[in-house]
Image (tube, rainbow over all chains, first blue to last red; front, side):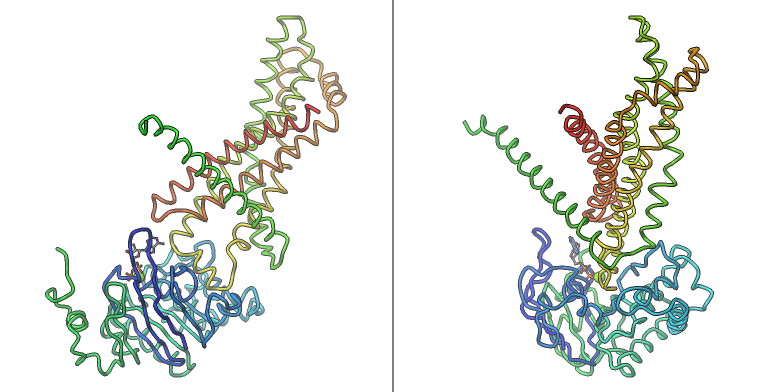
Length: 248
Length: 261
Ligand SMILES: Nc1ncnc2c1ncn2[C@@H]1O[C@H](COP(=O)(O)OP(=O)(O)O)[C@@H](O)[C@H]1O
Ligand SMILES: [Mg+2]
């Protein structure tokens, strides 16, 4: 279980997170929604310790993440970055198998390569992309390689930052199915950021909406449509008018 | 009164900021050294760094040295002629190349070639979240990116300086024997007899120091890059500037320490 309590983060004068309280149960799928630039990526990064919150406490299974042994802590996580964040000096398969080629999870090279190709297949990529370099792939393909890398070592907890952005509708469907499978079959805990309401309905157990630095609404996905929350309603329906100002 | 004090304030703040950055760079360098000594070690990254910093720098180092050695021979011949001391060309070329010009010019070339590429590469990785990705994949960027590059530079830049010294002396030799009428065998004999072990040692010590400065500056500015393409540009510019100035300053201090005893 991951809990965030009263987490604050500002970059200079810009307050991004202003008191986040959120709980993600083990084995559940939490989806974070919210407008661009509201701090969703910063929220995920603070759990991983890539961004240090100014105040507040984040715990994993009851233990403060800042006190945890970093290596053991990070070994439980997989993360898909919003921009893919592939290592452009390494071919695709070595990106996917990065963890399996070094450190505590090291496997023989041939085995690591096989696992990488299998994970690539799961995200809808053929084995011939394995030896290409990331710069030779389209944006959507890079995103899927990033996804394959996030799941390669079968982590317990996986963070997906906009997994379907930039993909065609069919490929989005494939990725949604994959995320659902990872949660139901592998029993993983997932935290996903998305703008895609189809994705939300396909993969979420719980939904949290981030707005103005706080969690505006959170609850099970089934209650999302009749929450009565004007912010959430506006976001779901995609109206330009409502409490969320769309500056034009 | 406050208007009069204003320049002092600017000066004070500037000094404080400069001291703080020097402190941060020192801590960064110490941390890089400590990561060089503690496992895990990334052998492949180290070999790639050796290749990039050492082998691939040879052409530029060789060309710099050969032209400098040649020009030095011409200058000393012309300058020496003013008091009938043309014969000192071999000795002055040797000492000038080995003690000063070899290490400094190789150091500056490494700052141009290696510091810039390290800074741009690491800054781009930072801007595109690749550094964050490394961390989440349980790999410490200080160990995986910084330590191999710094270690490679510490080991290979002295070798480059040695190569530069030899090529520089050869440049002087070619000019002296080719157009100044020196006897080849005598030129070499004079060079070899004149150089002392401390001259050679100082060359290698300087090479090691300059290599370390070049790599640490590239890594430091890269790891602390700002956001976007502009951040990468600033990091690269800052790294090369800092490396070049620090190399020249270190050269002055090392020359003082090694030869004024
Ligand atoms: N490292 C950083 N330095 C300065 N500002 C940042 C940094 N990371 C994020 N921000 C700012 O924080 C805000 C939220 O960013 P982000 O979490 O990426 O938004 P999103 O909800 O679209 O994922 C943005 O305004 C962004 O400019
Ligand atoms: Mg984001």
